[in-house]
Image (cartoon, rainbow over all chains, first blue to last red; front, side, top):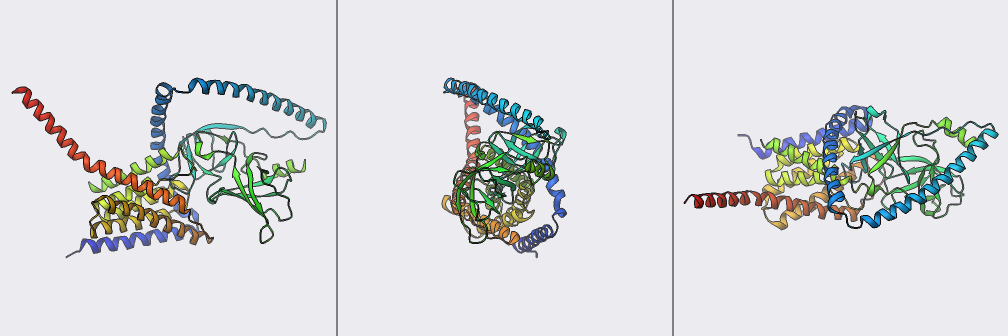
Length: 282
Length: 173
């Protein structure tokens, strides 16, 4: 007679062995199991789009009709902010025109314009500890893997995996195995920012001990990774100390508030390392 | 029929997980509703159900998160099977035993999950104990509420039916 408990035990061992084989196959060659990822994301992204639409409608109803407490004060505050930002924008425009004139006068090649597309975040982390989001733009909007994703206050991450027609996954810069080529604004020293740490979630690696790094220094993208455009904010140095080896140990706090991501911008013009190097030379 | 139920519960956990966490991406608190679904299936229907739920949920999460496919599957299958085995060996119909299963399930899952990643990436991984403890408590609270709702729902429906039939017969009389 077949014992159901023993049969489950055998089944358990077989399934666990299957997982181990699956993991081993990817550790050797990551191309082996992409089909399952693509099929799962293809199916789930459709449900996520529909769910996000429903949830946003309910939120809209609640915030638009029911929860109007403080809306007037918030409106006033936002109006003031719009005026202030308008002023800042004008200042930036004036500076940009001066730069353009200088570029022309010095016969320099003009900086490449960066084109972006706005996307709405429709889903969050599928696994705690692996910060990722799903956005409502996909291959139909011209999105490809490895495109940079930014927010008004800095970089967010990059598109990874298979891009669906109307959805794409974004690996956040604060996530494990995420990274970006970076430099310190004040000194110009270059390094690599990597994510996946607890608090603060970013580290700036490969900066020699000789470099003067101070708390509060701004960390920007260098563009050398070929994904993120040069000059975008990553974060600020929160801790810096001499490392035991050649390099300093620098902890970086991102400027983007990842707990409040609603809309992001996808950079559709990817910078090439050659362009970044040219910009450095200039 | 039970298999369809397990698939639906895990799918609901996954959809809710991604829908709710989009408002707290990278935030301080974390929940794992797929793990809650796995523990629920294991406690309700035994180790085979836990095994199936863990495999499905874990692989789906791995595929969506961009991590190594199979790591989440391995850890969730283990938790599902162990929770189901505990459910068949001990009486876990009470509040405290269930709470302990959900909390222990979260800790075992996190240890195995991060342990496997440390092995694969060959770099030491610090388990964020504060966030894991928070996650264990939140997972347990949600799991217990789900159990309570599901166990109370048939009684509530029966009482409502009985009240309706009493009212309708009273009206005719």
